[in-house]
Image (cartoon, rainbow, N blue to C red; front, side):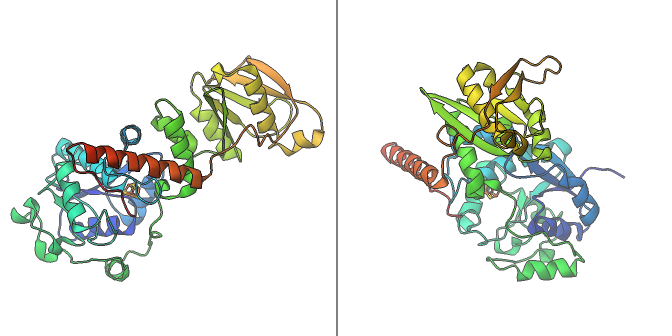
Length: 372
Ligand code: SF4
């Protein structure tokens, strides 16, 4: 029997995407779920669990660098309430899904979107715009609300039976929960979770990385998810320090290190790992203040009352340390800090206003910011 899927479902792991896949499977279609991963959403680790619990064919694809690139260039349709570029995100993911669909010879795409569920990105006109800009008009099916929408090629060709598709709409969850019960789905994912770009605490980290690094990458945004984050600004330079909160963070920091990063760790006492991004180029006094800040999160170092040795090594190189610094553990709040979300929000709005005005002065119609 051929393993070629008929249809690719964009699979977030949320209930709507599970239901979309199951509704199509119920028609006898061969469904493959495609789960996208970025530093902001998606989880490679969850895929085996989903496969087992929902009995679905699921593959994953990392699109973090494409997403970082979209953020660097700024999303054409703006950000939502926080830093979520929902319209551009959906266009990007659908483009990627179309490429995947063509590569495996599937005949169409599907999503779990429901008309009117979100104020902007699931409005009828926005759904249409997303399809057009992603180049998937006619090949994208939304099984949960299909009967509200025009016929797709898959329905016209008879591959998909439109009479077995659904007419959900609006923000309520009752229809979805009833359908889940009918399909025997007992593991119901929590609604709404999953995208860190909608959370202020995460978004302020991402915005700082996006605006202070010359070319923020997938790896940089991944690092922004880890531990405690601090920035120091001096003479027009920006220094980025990440300090682990626990053993899991420390392991992830060690794995995230790049060749010109510095890893800092107490030489003789237990304590957190700290990563200085591009730290190989930092002046000695900045590295020392970073070491003091990192040591201040080690209770034993603080309790010692005196200077402690912090071992600093570059990149992944094991063996000989590059240098040992003697520092007094100290919380340097005037030196190492994080910008509060309220300040960042003002900057994002000002930038959006500037883009809007620039668009007004050009011949193009300005795009609207998301309102999710
Ligand atoms: S909430 Fe996040 S994952 Fe969902 S569409 Fe918006 S940016 Fe994309």
